[in-house]
Amino acid sequence: MAFNFDNDNDWLFMFCKKCWDYKKFVFNKAINFEDETTDQLGKCVDCDKKQKISTLEIKEYYGHLNDHNN
Image (tube, rainbow, N blue to C red):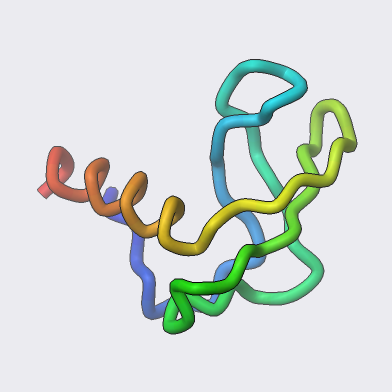
């Protein structure tokens, strides 16, 4: 299943810098994929560490996954 950037998402899987693994991150509000210049503050559900994640990094990572899922 491909990731849809048009849907309002308040969670996603990204690399956690504390767990050193891909984990689920939750966000206080839906991620704004239109603005690639801002960072999103998310919290890892495993270790509870908050970290900034680049919106551009999110789009590149999930765009690459979408290329292999379509």
